[in-house]
Amino acid sequence: MSRAPTVSALGFHLAVLAIVLYAVFPFYYAVITSLKTGSALFRVDYFPFSWDLHNYVTLFQQQPFGRNILNSVTVAVLVVVVSLLLSALAAYSLSRVAFRGRGLLLGTILTVSMFPQVAVLSGMFELIRALGLYNNLLGLVFAYLIFTLPFTVWVLTTFMRELPKELEEAAILDGVSPWTIVTRIFLPLLWPAMVTTGLLAFIQAWNEFLFALTFTLTDDQRTVPVAIALISGGSRYELPWGNIMAASVLVTVPVVVLVLIFQRRIIAGLTAGALKG
Amino acid sequence: MTPHPGAAPQRQPASRQSPSELTRRRTHTAWLFLAPLLAVMLSVAVWPLLRSIWFSFTDAELSLLGEAGFIGLENYLVRDGDAWYGILADPQWWAAVWNTVHFAVVSVSIETLLGLGVALVLNKTFRARGLVRAAVLIPWAIPTVVSAQIWGWMLHDQYGILNDLLLRLGLIDQAIAWTADPDRVMTVVILVDVWKTTPFMALLILAALQLLPRDCYEAARVDGIHPLRVFTRVTLPLIRPALMVAVIFRLLDALRMFDLVYVLTPNAEDTTMMSTFARQQLVDFQQVGYGSAATTMMFCLIALLTMVYITLGRVRLGATP
Image: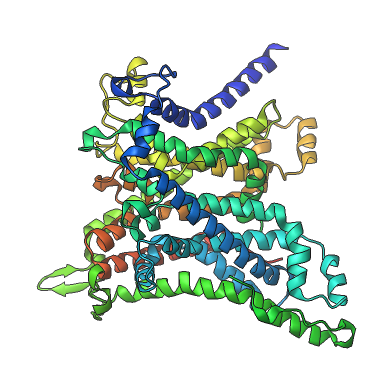
């Protein structure tokens, strides 16, 4: 009688192990590759035998990679701040006030999150050039709002809707202005939701490639994903894989750390964005 | 972005106001708070979209955007001599459409099945579950460009670990050029995409699974109903709405796929997607008119597919309470 449960428990744990290996192995392999140089790079190892930081050093010497990281951080932080400001205000109207056209407005905002980024590429290019923001980080901040805003508005509206009505009723009767209601009553309660949505918007902006590739021109204005995509050696066969892996590890580590710390919040945010409604 | 000054406090005892006056003022404030968002959305989404559509009816070129002249439907379809030209008659465009649809349907199907499996495993309680759930999030958190580079290295024909592993296990006789072989390149792109996005699917399904009522399962267990039957008769119907929403989100994402193929298989015609085709026309060939026709077609195709999906699947997206 006791054999069957043991076998199935073993099978279950093997499944868990397989899932973890599948998810983690490529990143693990990038880390061990990034620590190898010279001919070791072209020998397949399954375990880390070499601990050489040479690739990390040359990465910063051969190109403005430090600058690229700074660019990515700047753009992502600005996008998060602007998105949260705009959407916290809007979410109040969309969740707490019943006005005509609210459903239509929410529907339109959701539709914007669905359309492909490339559909606006030529119009956005023209606009960014007209604003003098071509090859400028502010141009990217502006363009990124097209995909962060629908998401942050949607999630914050979902969260704000769930706060009890009594909270503001008392304040309204006391004649407190809506501005004070939002900033003094709702925002403090919404901090967890703001952290989650901010984080998800940050990851979206940090990872974005199409706009960053199209709207920047010079190496010193590039963000990290573009820099990594364009790292190249003399020819197709001389790609500096050590440097590429080192760069990949560097840009992934902060995101992975954030994800590990905030995993519960992230899952809550993702499901609020996609499932509720 | 500072808040609108009109929203500044006007302290009045609310008791003096009639209810309708209060409602009117609340509606007024609601629009004030929405105004900054609407202004930004109009300028980053609506206006560029309309301009892109307009460009598709012109002969615009990248360096001379201001001198675009109206040419009607010539970018879409025009008869010159006895041949048809334009995007609708362009075999490369239709190949890109087919590649994209093929990619989206196959990868999202695999992701859904695999995601369901992973979610069912993670739904059981076991030690270190939190850790496993965090590990599963890693592929999702890695930037697509980075995962393309990592997989490009793992799939390298001479030094790649995948060939090494398969050779050691005796599953293949000689190394395979994964990303150079026209017959394999789409499969490779699909596999990498599946690796990256299955976690997202799994976590969305897991969230739905965890909302299911426990007592149903207790009752089924007591009655001795086979777990497979419980799954098809109870679990699947209950998580179906969540599943449908997760699938449409992933489909939309897959249909606009760009980063992965741009980095992993830059020169492979067999993995040219609608997005890569359009960007190539717009930026590399500087043909803004023709490229915009491609993006406009893509927009319409995706809108159409979404409407069909939502209608046929009776998906409820974003219903307000």
